[in-house]
Image 1 (cartoon, rainbow, N blue to C red):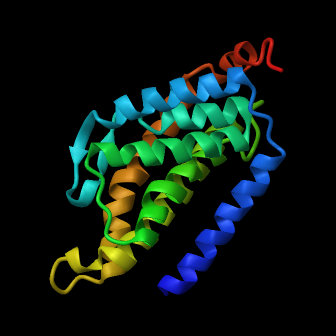
Image 2 (image 1 turned 90 degrees about the vertical axis):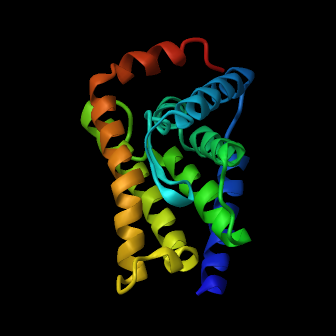
Length: 199
């Protein structure tokens, strides 16, 4: 299973590289990414609920990354997620295996960059995109949890069920809360203002 996951991970990272070849990162976009990632990291350190092995519910730390994706598109969004994932290691990250690192700290965070998958011109599309991005990231973490953290499941509990409960009650819940908050934020105005003068 680890070999299969490794191959899929390499393919996904390769697709990211192809995406970045056609993505123009201007100085303005790079500065925005840096600022939003910094905000995301600060919010990540504020946890409402802390789980063992690094999980929990934070103060909407995924929101800034999703905003980058909604404003500037998939490439910048994926890049912001990638940087955010690496930074999360600074706050007591848990690494059990190189592939687990890629799943939990790279791919799961890069998935947040998919928030603009359904467009950004309507509130319903924005909410759907945020839910999609959050769920995709949660699924990646669930796979990692099943493969690499199954030994922490309570006696008699299926490791896959344990990982599903662990991740969807933390990252999954935060994704839903983030989508609800996004519904209250005038993203259309943010997008319009952010793109003024964008080269």
